[in-house]
Image 1 (tube, each protein chain N blue to C red):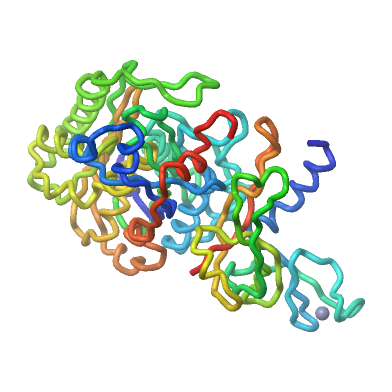
Image 2: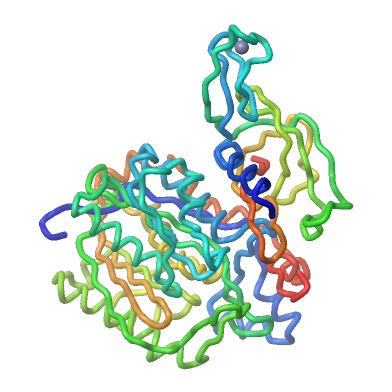
Length: 133
Length: 350
Ligand SMILES: [Zn+2]
């Protein structure tokens, strides 16, 4: 992996490991990933860091049967847009099987998993996925 | 210890959801299921998902331990991860865990390795440092996703799991009254760099390795503390199978019923560095204040760490704060051998 790729991975660790996002004290809205400027309030926005609970519900989902390179062993798997309890939406894999229960509105919680490996000798990327609860 | 109280502030566990029945493995290798299950005392074992490894298991257990202890992660001054299946040969698992529980950056962190006893060695390190007042809390983790060569006896036993213990001097759920170790150079089990699967000395792993070290360390602790086997309410031993801990107890004059609560291997397999710690986890989940526990680990190569633990009143108010080990043991989904091979990447091309 190139130095730029490593730097990007490293910068995203707080978001990927701990669901760190942003909160605007002016309008009260939460954001994920981290943003520096509030899209609602622009210059009036007062942004600060916040850690999301990791609880949420499935907003939308799809099943992947023809995975991209690097994810062949995981297929078939479910990808969902998860709406966090605090509001923001994010895209993540749903793990632990039970795919018939992957439905809109199903409650989920964050788990810590391997996201990707850069081949046999490269970096292992870790971060959030979600499981049904 | 040395006039200061030190012990467990909180603990947490994690076991992957998937299981393979020993019978399913015998089906592939043409062995007799009943003979294998009775011989090893193992019904089924845990199988990690394809995106799980010793680091992800350790993170889940560590997060449960922080929840259980009810502490601020920033107060953890040392974090040690004991494993023989660290995802990297060079690059610590401990930094991944420390970051994922929000304990960084003001702490020391290091990976430990001593076959199946690295996690208990980590507890001893944390105890000494907490008693010395170097920091408020230390976290000791045992986590493994170990492998057996296809067709080897280890294939029936090698499971996956993690246990995390937060050690400190106040807000304790249990006091560690004493600890001691018994260590020799014994070549019973090893894995060379680059080798995918471990090698072992077959029958040699029993008498001169497991039993000699577990019994010697336990007896040393009993002599040192003056505790009588009859005064112990529970005994937890390293559990490479479902049989060895019961035999060890018998040799020490401890009745089998005091071993059962801490014997998890029959249901999730041998979780290596996590094995004795998950046993302790299971006992603490039900133990009452005042009860006393003997825990003795074993790591091939070889050594045993023995601990005498007394449950304190503080255990009651922390109960139920984090998921119990039993809930992980009960939440399971069976896989067939083919799926298991894929999950464990046992084929060279995977
Ligand atoms: Zn705003």
